[in-house]
Image (tube, rainbow, N blue to C red; front, side, top):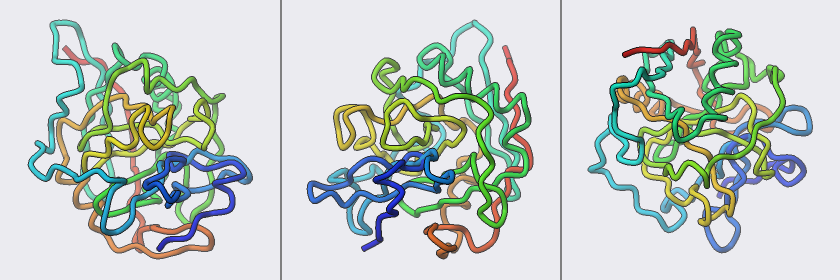
Length: 241
C-alpha cells in the first residue's frame, strides 16, 4: 500500500484529498508547495478505485457531462507535451471561475516548461505545479472557489479537473486528467466538496493514455513521478467558433 504524505494532513497538495475507501486509504495527491500546495485526489488501491469500477467502454474523447457544442464560440486549451498534443474543450459555461483561472495561468505562460509530475495508471495524470527535478513553481494567483457542486460535471474518463489540498477552496494552478471514470471524486462521494471538472479532452486522448503508461518512481517524498520527464512545452487557451 502506498504511504500517505504527512503534508497531506497538514496542507495537502493538489487533488489528493479524497478517501478511496472506508478505511481511509487516502493518499496524498501530487506534490507539496512547501507546507501547502495543490493536491490531486488520492489514488485508489491497485485493485480498486474507491468502490468504483472504471467503465472501459467509455469513449476516450467524449465526456457526456460536458455541455454539447452550441453556436457560441468555445474556449479550447492546447497542451503541447513532449509526448504529443492534447486538446481540451473548456466548460466555461458550467465552471466559469475555474476556466477563467486556468486561462489566466495559460495567458501568463505559467505552464510552459512544467511536467506531469504524478502519473498513476488506471487513475489520472497530474501537472501544473512542478518543474523538472520536482522543483515547485509557486502559483501566481490566489486560490479559487471550488465549483464542483455548482457545475454538475462528473470526473469521467477524459475530463480535466483541478487539484487541490484537503481544503475545498484551495485550487490554484495544478490540474489532472482522469484516465478512467473517477466518480468517487465527485461531490458527496469520498470528498463532500469534490474535485472541480472544467472541461474534457476532445483530441489527443491517446497521448494522455501514453503518458499514463510511463514508468514511474519515487523522488524524495514524491511518489508516482515519471522516470523520464513528460514536459508541458506550451499550454495556450484560444477562442474558436
